[in-house]
Amino acid sequence: MSKDTLTITDNRTGEVYEVPIHYPTYPKYAAYIDAAAIRQIQVSDDDFGLLTYDPGYGNTASCKSSVAFVDGDKGILNYRGYGITDLATNCTFLEVAYLLLNGELPTESEMGDWRETVRMHTLLHENFKEMLKGFHYNAHPMGMLVGIVGALGTFYPNSKACFDEEVRCRHIMRIIAKIPTIAAYCYRHTRGLPYVEPDNSLTYSGNFLRMMFKHPGVKYEVDPAIVRALMVLFILHADHEQNCSTSVMRSVGSSLSDPYSSVAGAATALYGVRHGGANEAVIRMLTEIGTKDRIPEFIEGVKSGEKGRLMGFGHRVYKNFDPRATIIKNMASEVFEATGVNPLLEIALELERIALEDEYFISRKLYPNVDFYSGIIYQSIGFPTDMFPVLFAIGRAAGWLSQWQEMLNDPDFRIVRPRQAYIGYDKRDFVPMSERKPSGTEPACQGESSDD
Ligand code: CMC
Image (tube, rainbow, N blue to C red; front, side):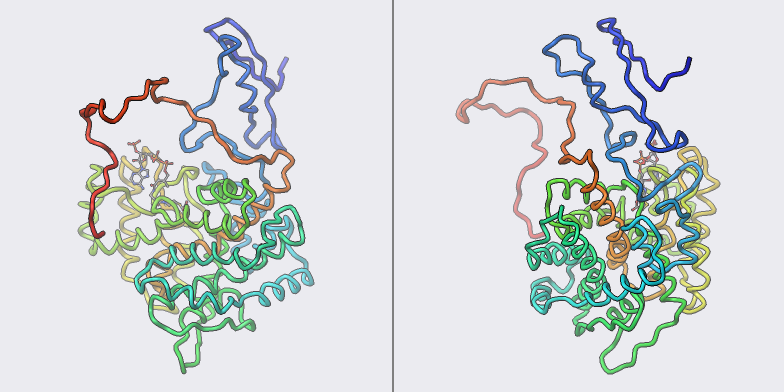
């Protein structure tokens, strides 16, 4: 008779253990066992018990979540059960943010209230303009964003009251409202341009574009196709279940830091080239390739390891196609009608075609991800490459905050504290400095003076 349990025989001892198998909601979603159930498997009473080893958490559920669902084999991404294509086609970004945070799509009046509240909080305290002056003119805007978002928490000491729902919601809304203003100010600092105050009569993405690109004394006008494209990109980036930066958001938040510090932490994780920094790296890669005839040589360099990875390709979860990449690729023509075709598009299309026919990429199930085409669109709109991860952060902030809120409401919530499989020395006797001998190996970390 079938039973929802797992029987484990420890061949070291002959002991047999029966461990319950759980289903999150429906049997069609991945079943799991409690990792703690393995701890009872011991060879003796003083044995620590068995651990699971899972570098990069490839097969570990770190939480129960109902925010987003990804099926990597089928190329499915749903937010709160709604397909990403439906949301990208029919919703505004703030509507999607509301859905992620509250679990349901807003009614007309709920949406009106939410939109108004966000619009009321787009302004930044004047002190931030002084703070931005402290950054070098060529500071990476993502580094500035991390600093300013973290500093914002110091203006709201009550934001640590994470379990007070009213307080928590106010700070969630503040972050979503202010992050485009912070992002635009970071950009304008690097260009030496005066800051543009928010215009709350505009949409979320329209207002952001104006704060970014309005020139003093010139009326700012933007093609609605561009406003819409940027909004769709924010929607596509809004959540992606337990990715690297969201896991950091949950980890930092699990110590009950304020949400500004947690979002700053998540943004630092997003910054890296294997995560949100990839779209920036794609543009550098396409620019380096330069012409279509150099693609085969570049692909060979990737395969031999000499050229690093093919940026914008591959995903931990998607092993078929990334539905976000498909939506972006289809949207590209609308944007290019407004901006003119980006010459890098031709190289990207050819690179994708060649890679998808190559055994190296086929056998490893490497397909274009969200970052492969998003950078080309951002560049066509006029964003400099170092702003790309910042744009990703604006969209993803809604997801980070939804996941953080879900964690705080979870009855299983505990501070994040993984275990390790220790591979170091057993206890050693201390050696005084006068008796130490060179180990014979080059120190991995040896300070040296340099200006870089
Ligand atoms: N180009 C060439 N080879 C690759 C690539 C790539 N982009 N991605 C993975 N591989 C190879 C890798 O070398 C390894 O080969 P082998 O088995 O011979 O050692 C194999 O594929 C498996 O790689 P992995 O590192 O175990 O895969 P992962 O699931 O840990 O990494 C990834 C996922 C996204 C970090 C990786 O595919 C990658 O570095 N891609 C390029 C960076 C990128 O585009 N990142 C954006 C991800 S989507 C948006 C986001 O999450 O922010």
